Image 1 (cartoon, each protein chain N blue to C red):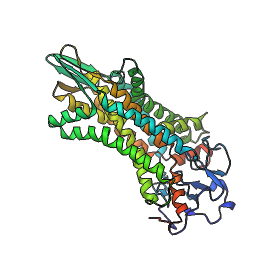
Image 2 (cartoon, rainbow over the protein chains, first blue to last red):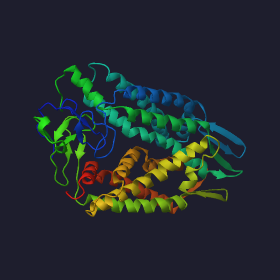
Image 3 (cartoon, each protein chain N blue to C red):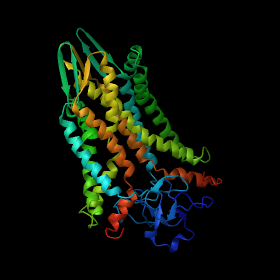
Image 4 (cartoon, chains in turn green, red):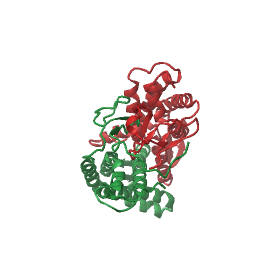
Length: 216
Length: 214
């Protein structure tokens, strides 16, 4: 069954005096504390969610700086010892001609995290503001952030694989640097920050604008 | 989904609310293979499939077996100048061993092995009684809730792509060979993705609420 009656205005659970369970989609009378079906806590809107979003966002951002400044990999090869940060590692790969892999590393460890910081901040600001871009775009942004955020962990896994695998004593060894720790924390905190965001507020902001409902 | 004209008279059981945008609808069950989609935000609300339960259980059992086997067997092997080193996934996860890195080791092991493993076992635990038309298992509700909460933290597929990246990085230092666990992990990633697309959360919640009537 695809869409039917697309021209009608949607009624939100809150307008109908109901509260929805975001985990199992069941409706309950407004004020019910816990979902009787799945046991999740019920709130009509996570009113204080923006504070949590910002708090976790800031911790994530703070961890992101040492993640880029400290070395990620410590490579010991015969007599030379090289420390490479995320960016210098990608540059090295590009020098060796592995442009595809360099691009994956740069996208997963630099472009995606920075994009995420920007997107979460934008969403958190935009639900407080009237007007602005359409809810559909903002929702798309939220979904992309939620889906893609986990993929930043790839760099941590690469470091884990390399440091376990490349352990040939006296010839070549690779060990993780402090940046790995901070980078993992940064990814985890931004994931938590995105999870704390309540997407229903995106639509409330639109309803407050009294825009023509855009049902696509 | 059809819009409700007067929600105050509809029994609550006959309603479904979009978890993303809070739009409320009168419940209309789609047939198997069809999908009910939120009119406003296009979130898929219900997507039942024929015999999905049995397929999901089968896939989950396969994943449990694969993870257990793949974590122990050698995974990648390198050799340089006559010396070689082979590692299992457990070795990779536990390669962070100094000080605060130990936390990272535990997190990594959790993300790539224990969380996927736990999710699959919870899924089997919840779905077996449902598929057999038995009353729900004890604490099935809590089990399924935990499984859903862990979903974003299950990162086996990301680890698989990480292997590809690591291989290229190592290629000019040493020769790399694949162990049996590498191929197992490849299959596992496909299975995890298939399973996620088969599972209709709403149908599971609904059958936990009404174990007999389906």
